[in-house]
Image (cartoon, rainbow, N blue to C red; front, side):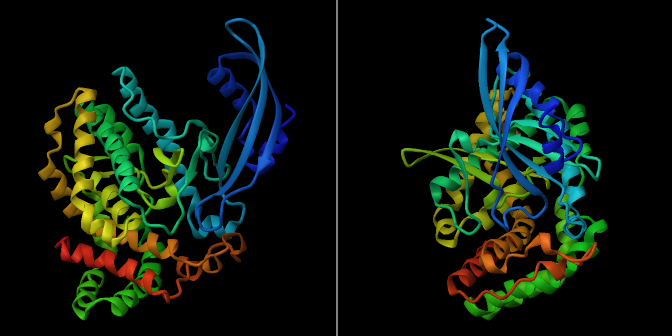
Amino acid sequence: MEFSNFLQSIISCRFEESMLVKFFENAFDLENVTITNVENKDGVKKGDSYLSEVNNFTVSASGKHKSDGKVVDVSLPIITKCLPKSVGWLKTFRSADFFNNECIFYNTVWKAMNQFQLEKNVKVFESIPLCISAYSDGTNDYIALENVNYKGFSQLTRSGGLDFDHAQLIMRLFARFHALGLAFKDQKPEEFQTIANALHETYFSENYRNWYSKFQINNLFPLIRDAIKQQLPESYLRRFDEVTEDDFFGKQIKSCERKGRLAVITHGDAWAPNFLLKYEGGNLMDAIMIDFQLARYASLGLDITFFLYSCTEQPMRLKYWDRLIEGYHETFVSTLKQLGSNSQLLTLEDLKEEIKLSALFGVGMSMEALAMSLLADDDVADLKAIEGEEVPLENVWVLPLLKDVQKQQRVANMLKHAIDSNFF
């Protein structure tokens, strides 16, 4: 086929033009489809994708409508993620592990979750881009998705804190996603357990302690500690030291391993670049979530606390924390009812307790997310320039101390909120 060599040279030798033909046939109800053009677009901003190389295409095709035989021309923007071609980048960031998990999410987990809601004749959650194809073998991995920018969705910036309307929309997004998982678990426990067990922990496991903990201890904690020292009374610094010096990484492992009654399929990576928003006439209308490399079977509280601490700032948390939690619960309960499960599977008291139990994890992930999001563009590592086959993570993710007072306050106030709330 005309475009196969071009696509395979950029994406993966496993990415076939025939996959696009089949997709266009199914998506547009066509036959005799021919790919007529593939136009390569720009990639993503440095610092928004640490685990993969990203390419944007617009694919044009021609085919006959199955209903009337009329020949039509159609096009679709597509975004593809593939393993980094730089061996140093690939191995330093363990990209193959993350790719494998995300492919499992699209090919197995989400496929089953979506089928569950379709069987109910209720679509409670559709806020994930359409997956055209996903493949993983550790060498030729790729994921091809509908690029929803053409529908008006755009990415949040890495550094901005969200206002109430934005935060509420995304909290309700999580509520529908989590409730779909809990209803599936409630009604088809064996089938749910099969898909849950298919996912692999990609971050917080003893297998990865040597990979991550030195970065955490030597690079991340000093940045956070300095911000607290500059902006908060000494008592907060002492509490931070107490918490982080007592095997913080091990505590995060335990948070991920805890499989209680409210364990569901979680997104896992709830920082700002993984949400796309849609506006009409300046009004916020919709949101979707992307990037499921860190998807895991774990407490729903992990996503909530990670999101709230990484994507909101202190004035918003102090004023609206309870309202955001209540809004999440309201949407969650409504979704459970739509899917035919008992609304008492999650009471508001249950939710608040789960958030308290999950807060240490959320703060831990948010420390990393904020440190990365507040980096100046010049300080973001150029991952393609990593020399050698495998470089220790702490040598690549170098984090200069924050000099800007507002950035220091944002980091310090995250810890202040968690400590003042007696979360740990």
